[in-house]
Amino acid sequence: MKNKKVVGAVELCDLPAFTITDLNVRVDTGAATSSLHVDNIEEFDVDDELWIRFDIHPDIHNVDRVVRREVKVEGKKRVKSSTATREKRYVIVTPIIMDSVQWDIQLTLTDRSEMTYLMLLGREAMSGHFLVDPEHEFLLTGKD
Image (tube, rainbow, N blue to C red):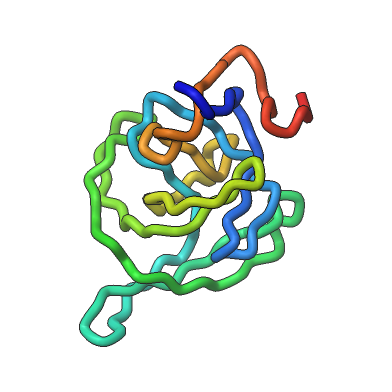
C-alpha cells in the first residue's frame, strides 16, 4: 500500500500519444480494462500486423475538433458494456500520465458517446498506482 496515491471518482489524465491533456476520466473499479471513446475505426495492415485508425476528440470542450490517429492493435477483447451487452473491442497499449507519473495501460476502444465521460480508468490500469475514494473527485489535482 505504500506510495499509492488516493484518487477520487473522477480525475484528470493526459494521453500523450493522442495529444490529449486534462481529460476527465471516470475511475471505475468495476471495470477490469480501461476504455476510450473513439469514432470511425478502420483496420489496415502494417508489415502483416493489424493496425487501426480512428477519430478522437482531443479537446473535450471543443467536440468539433477531431483528429485522426493510428495505432497498432494488441488484440481484441470481448467486453460486457455498462448496458450489459457484449461487444468485441480493439485493445491497444498507450502511455497515460496522471499526477506527473507516466506508465503504459491497455485501452479498449468503443463508442462512449452516450456516456458522461469519454474515458474509464479500470482496475488493471490503476493497479500498483492508486487507492480509490469514491466519495470525492479530483483528489490528485485538488480541483474538487
